[in-house]
Length: 350
Length: 255
Image 1 (tube, rainbow over the protein chains, first blue to last red):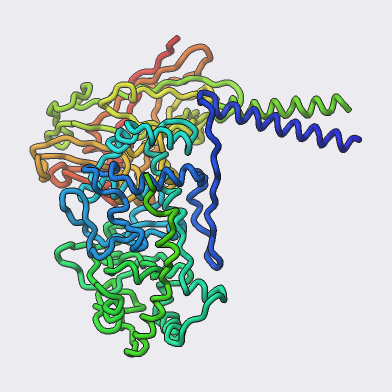
Image 2 (cartoon, each protein chain N blue to C red):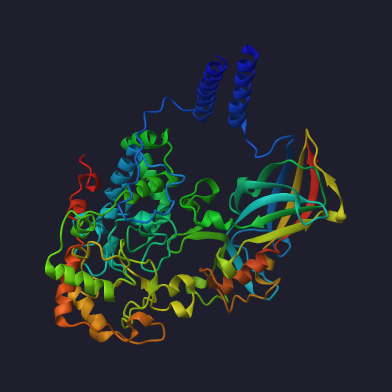
């Protein structure tokens, strides 16, 4: 008897508390549409992601809002440069066939746009690591005069003038307020949910496919000669390294040193992932290599031993032509076709 | 039995309402204090575009002057605050009168010194998109090297070596030896003791002397540095200086 009463009391207490807490949260808001929560799936073998959704729980509505923003030219000054202009899904969200990305007014940037996927595992973004949280990442291209060329005020004003956005912000965040935090959080939900772990490599790891002999041999080459920087399963260790590329004298991009101001960081750039590498040509921070083979040959024959060149590549990487051929076969297994064809991440249908 | 159920229920309601009505982060009485920042140069209220001479003998004008204030608190003898507002972060913008007045509620009364931080806590520099005073729309966030500009001074000087004679100081940095947050502690005029009271507001008028931006802890010649827009040693020196801009002019009670 006593037990049953206590249980009832607890149930009542919990529902009363929930009701009251809920009531105060919504004081000045009209009825809020139902919100569908989503979760970031951590692929088998992946480490835990960064805790970037702590204050920004992922919802279907927030994700769809982020998706619309990602594909919307209104985020740029002239209306022609949505995020998707430099981050194309068929190229694993990098820029297809462009060494350097370009933005409003026919201007080039100084860097090669990287693919966007598995971003929830990155603590720092950009080739120089200047961005410390996925939520604030979009501010960089949005405000850069040679990228989207807009201002935060300008974008927020445009979104506010669009009744469809007011409705989408309400659906995602409970009311029609449109501010930069909500815009950035919606974009973060969309981009953070882009997980790519469906390559042949992943299937082999899960015992659902087998490598060809050449791929298997190439995997061995990879493990022996590449994996200390391009660490599995994300194929990057997120560190900054000088791989012995000569300074590009027209761009004078000093990489990580631009952020830290430290000489020892001169010419260091973030180790890029090798996932989807076959889709993200050209390669390097300035896109100077147009084939994977050319990158491999750089490590075999042309590394410059400068003051900050990484010890792991300083003496160049010895590799026979057969090993190189097998390695190239293996790298093809890192392509995730399901990801680049995943309709959830495609341009929303109007 | 029924009594137990009812009292548990009642307790539950109280807990629930407690979570609801919570506006300040403390229990008990709150005392209201209002800080009014008054930017000045050459001993007179700041006027945009007017020419001033800094203590190093260099001319300058001001077109923008903004800084963040946080951790407003009161001190009494001990280094630990008697009371402190841990949550509020405010952006004072010399061009916007409303932002120069900051009102906080504190849960302590007696003090002989005022304290606040110029700048934004490091954690808020790494926690993603913020809103309110910290909205990147306020032009105080570096988009290419994540982090807040803690204080910003812009204008012109005939001694500037930058295009259009501009002087541009965007001071920030929150990591290790690049930190540019500065804690300010100000004595009350005539070393007086003060007690915050219920039913009235204590108003504190604070002079913000821009001349000291250029010369106080360090002599920062415009001729040598007409612009600083990255974290690093130079920003740290300007931060040392902006920790010295403040002085309490007056403290009064208002109904």
